Amino acid sequence: NAGVTQTPKFQVLKTGQSMTLQCAQDMNHNSMYWYRQDPGMGLRLIYYSASEGTTDKGEVPNGYNVSRLNKREFSLRLESAAPSQTSVYFCASSEWPAGIQPQHFGDGTRLSIL
Amino acid sequence: KNEVEQSPQNLTAQEGEFITINCSYSVGISALHWLQQHPGGGIVSLFMLSSGKKKHGRLIATINIQEKHSSLHITASHPRDSAVYICAVRSRRTSGTYKYIFGTGTRLKVLA
Image (cartoon, rainbow over all chains, first blue to last red; front, side):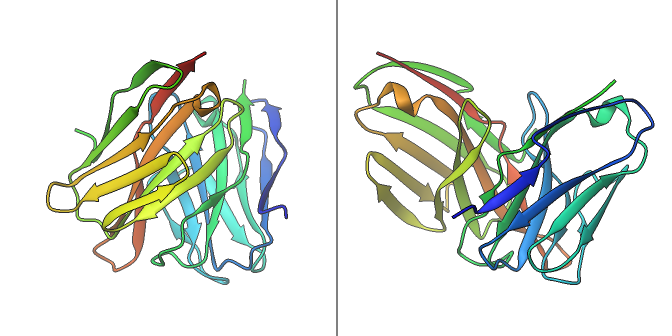
């Protein structure tokens, strides 16, 4: 029972490079989320997808794009990586955004941008 | 001031001690979520509650909506409880959609 799977687990990029973080869930959840976690700060929402076919900006969307490829998959793209995007990225999913079921998190992707 | 505040930020306890972690929030919420982040980085959901109290094994979570406060208690603490405990609240945006606001976490270390 995999839950939420993120790839890759670690990545080092140079400034200006692009990359896509992948996330897939096997719980048939409708809603998916991308967060970043920085030292001394709580998790901050980058983008979310309340249901298949919809995406919305969170608190810190600048420099990122997302694609809800299908119900299972939600990817996060950095078009031109900047050192300020060095962070740990978490994908999460939940049955519905307003439901009583909690969010389930992936193991995170540690991204360093030099 | 953060909308979700946790205390203490760091906590060291001896094995067997009763532990309390507090979470206070300043926004209207529809639910509150307690999460555990392991030293390896993975995040696990512990509880989601909107009123009263929930218990799972040695963990107890309570919430007081009027006082905008929640506590997470760990009874008979064990070194394997060492982790960062994160409080998150689900709040409704003016647009009608929902958002989660996360605290910065309480780092717990339980010594054998």
